[in-house]
Length: 583
Image 1: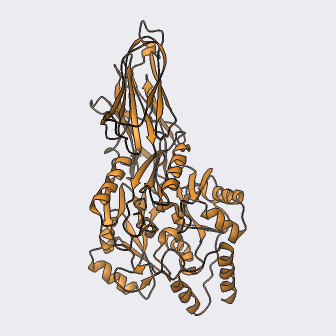
Image 2: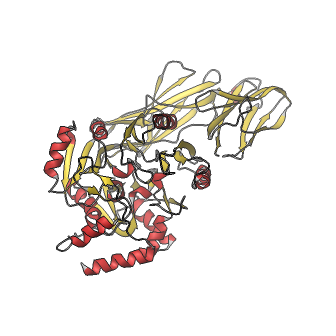
Image 3: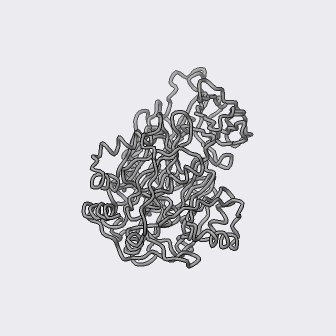
């Protein structure tokens, strides 16, 4: 005991941190004073008052067999981990239990209260499974299990050392969960925290400098050693570690940014006089310049986080994704709360998005911090790089499909249509292990092509891409194979090259080329499909043309931050590209 206290004291000296006396809140049933995110005098007192030795467990300290893939939050889940006494509203639990099992971490002393209060507040008790173990706090996101699939295709848990040394019970929860669920647990000693980590499920992850700073001061690790551990245990091939956005606070990335899928990131936006305004804009620009696992730059959406009091921004990015549902924290202003929901619906089409007000939500911790999705060990995984560029002729659709249930794939198809016509079902052929392919034929004339992938395995699981299909689909402009048309010797009669810079602020330049003199129309459209401004409409000579856009609409008003589409119509073809304005 005394040796542990000494080690923790050294840690505080090395990191320059000290416990705070600020207390977070009382639980919803008013049973106890909850330990806040940052260290507090309350938890130190509880730690020092503990009698008897801390429990020790034999942990598997070797990494899993590779190649390893760390699961993304939006992948299929079978449960969600929360802790009782609660730091979440019962309304949220009642909605989550419609989708997944509630894995409730509870001490033996509170189990009876948990049973009665959950039932009394309408929670489906058939969807509740208790993990009865001593625990310290509500922050299951930070200390809960991180899920990987190892090289043998089996689900595993990686257990980091929770960076709150005065919470030794919390640190053991992933081990106990693994024992309860019969999932192997792989542990390492490097300090980390779940709220400061996000991954795309395709070997890319991101955190703030907190991981480097704590690993250096506590574990004596260099940046390179941290990156190597993240690859060895989590399969990360690219680990982006970003600077802090502010000097204080907990420095968790989930308080200001969130992956919504492999190509989409949601970033907090605040009012211009807030001290994080410039830093958030810079981080958004940086993220938009990075390459996603699909080989394309990330699409960055911004959600405005208003001042809910004390110059503190609401943390709308601190949301939770479970299967096809997104649960967003509300902060009590109906206008801003609803606006945040609309941003999510725009950025993640097809998801069911709902909001939940709770008085304990603050800028540094909200809904995401207090809940952790538990991955489906038999998940049906469908990977696909969407077609988002203009295409000519037949278009190949490829997918990686893995049934972790061990069952056969019973159906793998692409549904597609041109210009709002009837949906056509196209089988995907297996070309090698886990690799499937099909070809959408060229249309008779250029137009919009929409498509989605749907897969079923013999276990009865169904998945697809986009994940919310058939409510959502991908789309691209699909031209006939004009290179094969008689009398046409140049298939590229018109081409939209791109815009520079992208992302941009306050202006950008679009470039297009014409093989022959002809009519050209270039327009800017917002994410809802509304015309923002017509930049070009007339006859242009053959050659290359640069068109400047000053970031203003047709009435001369500056447009807000967001993703805009610029569309070229020329030589009987139509091309569309995306441009991101970040202020």
